[in-house]
Image (cartoon, rainbow, N blue to C red; front, side):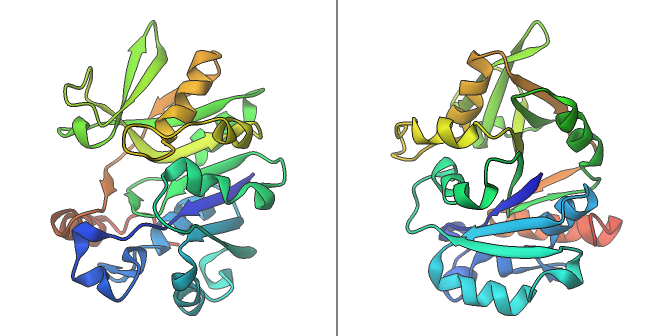
Length: 242
């Protein structure tokens, strides 16, 4: 299984800090934000990873990360995403890299307390399909929200104004090799983007979407307030350090 870290976007809510750098290179406590999703993958036994980001920022990531070996990776590659066309569009840029293998996809601004070793093993034991990690939140309207019936996810609604539950879909996804075919068939949603929730719904419709709760705390870093919160959490727990 290969790792794919999605680290594009303009980081507009973190301006002016992101006027001169990619937000995933901002410091969270004692290291760049991008170190944490890399550590998440490495701690799950995933040693080959790709970072998808804007072409102008790839040199910055290369300078910050080198070849990735100091962070536990055996290989570190990069792919470009021009503009902001959605998470599923970013994922499509990794198709040739994945080479028909299973992937673990993680958003570059996600930081977790524990690790995903056990979910990764359970996904590897699946014959096919996808696996998503959920977490209860007080702000479900900011995320994709899972609707569960009979113990199964029947629908993921992206940023619903009236959420059906408090179960947010965290930015960590496990997909089999059919994910890229699914992405290619998507049409833009109401935000004009290819939504990752539509990818998850495609798996849900075919009865192939597994889920579990993410252990420990979870930080989605997109605002100055969430950046400060993540720094405090990391400082107090040493979360997910390589």
